Structures are given as structure tokens and as C-alpha cells.
Image (cartoon, rainbow, N blue to C red):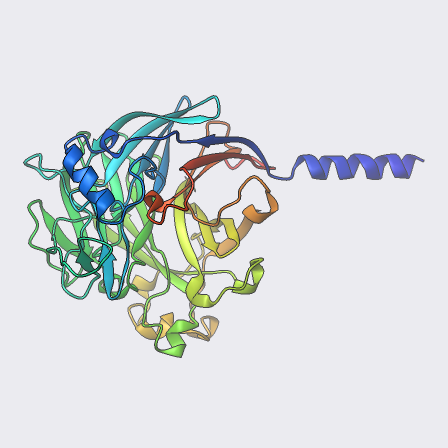
Length: 414
């Protein structure tokens, strides 16, 4: 009897430590002009005629940062866009990527303030592609009328707040690391070496040149900023290299870069690493290596980062520790594309990958019924995660409203 009782207690303790959803919050119908008040009603009406089904289901969930006291900062990406042969259509081409401040109230996500990103002169930016070779931008669903490229355009995918109240962002277009002030004005943009843009704000090609080889629409997606605001970790969404080459198509590593951002105007690259993905078969739906994505990050301590990996069927969240990983800036082959191919024997090359520890698989939580999670944050207790989805501005009309899930973990992370 005693053995049975002890076994029951042990089982109860194990169950109590399983991650569980403790809240689900939904963004109510929200007019797009609540995010971009400079847009005219005529522009919004034209966007609906150009193939956008609804103007009241925006997404604040391309990235997430916890502000404390139940308040969050979300960020939009480039705005409503849909697929075209060889490009994308942008029914609302003047939409500006926006910082969205919100709180959770009842079962709702309540928008408090929106801060569209702007250039130094105060002009709102767009999310349009920057340069030839990227997606061709079209004006509507017919995919006939081309829009101009915009060197200033940002496709923002993650955000962090500095101790001084400014913002760091990562974006996919070029891809870039961006610094903005408390008013949302872009003060500096860092692009890969060799990617020089004629922007209306300061730009420096500082990042490793390899990042420019990111796959289309798979640029910098993840940003983790240390608590003191001095170190930033940025990660590509996917492996680099063309999927037409089987050696790259089967790749299961992505590049991560560490930067010293103590001086936002003179950032320095201090590290570059390879981060492994899971075996696609770990997911409950069929996936190929090319389907794997890293979609959100946050800093925990030292050289530990929380990283959200996703594919068809859900997401896996890991603690990733770079402490013993090989800094490829110090390796003779560190900038070689050969390292990004499938089947590389890293140990034989003297390369250690970062250690990963699995925390959570979202398909084990019935309330999390999406595989398009793109932001995560950690609350004050160090044990509750906030996850947010990206509903793509309901571009097909089938997507539901933007949502946030609070998940209580079985352990404290801080």
C-alpha cells in the first residue's frame, strides 16, 4: 500500500510539472487605421477591392516583448500581402510596420498604443521589398500592376526594448538588424556586408555576408537582447543556400550572430554560430528539412537563449546554450557555405554546436491550435511563457483573429 501511495504521489507531482495553458486571449475586431492612423479610408477601401478580405483582423504577433505589469509589446511585419507568381501582392502598400503596445484583459488582447516606424523626417516606412532579386511587389491580387521597390522598407519579425527605451528589431527584406528610438524613428540599420541600400536613414553593411544568402522570405526572424542591453543575438529563420541543390535542401542548421550593441551606432559582430534544427520527423505532421523554421527568441541569462522552432503541426521550444559552442569567427572555415550543407561532420572539423534542451511541444496542449507561433516572452515569475501567433492579416479571409496563450511551465527559467 505504501509503495502504491508513493507511486501515486510521484505521478501527481510529474503531472503537476507538465506545461499547461493558463489563459487564451483574442484581439477583438480592430480597424487597420488603429495601427496606421495616417492611412485614409479611401486607401483601406481600395485595399479591400484589391483582394484583401477584411481590414479588421490585423496581426500584432510577428514578435513579442514583455514590458512588465501585464503589458506587452508586439510588432507587425510588412502588412497584408499575398502570393503572386514570382512575388507578393500588397493591397495596402503604404502600410507601415508598427510597434503595438497591448495588455491582456479578461479574455481579450487590448491594444493600448500603436507606433508606426518612421524615417528621421517622420515619414512612415513601408514593408515593400528593397532591391532587385527579392519578391516582385504587385498592387493587387491580379498580380499584373507592379509596385516600386523601397530601399527603406522593413519586414519586421522580432523586437526587443533597450534599457534606455529604444527598440531593436530584426527584419527579413535585406535582412537587417534595426535600431529605432522611443518615437519609432529608425536611427540605424545594419545589413550584411556588400548589401548597400540607398536609404533615407543611416545604414551600414556590417553583418556577416553569408546572411545575404538567406532563402526568399526566410531572413532574420529572431532577436534576443541581454538584460543590460549590451548583447544581441540574431538568428535566421531557416538554413541558407538554394533548395534546388539537395545538399542545401536537406540542411538542418541555421546561422546565428552575436553582436555587441553597447553603442547602437557602432555595433560589432562578436560571434557566429550554427544552430541545429530538430529532425522533421519529431513533429506530428509530415515535414521536410526546408519546412523547419526558427521564429522567436529571448535571452535568459549569460549565453542561454530561449528559441521557438516550428513546422507543420506545431512548435518546439528549447533552451539553447552557446557557452561551449564554436565561434565560427575563430574557425578557418567559419564563413564557408560548405558548413551549411547536409551531412557535415562537425566534430571532425572541430566545431561544437550549441547545446539544446527541450522545454515544450505545443501540440501536446490542445488549446494551442496553430503552428504559426512567431513571438514569445517570459513573465515576471520566470515560469509563465506568453506565445503569440501571426494570422497574416487574414489575407485569405480564413485566418482567425490574433491570439496570445499563457503557458505555465513545469520549471522556473529565471
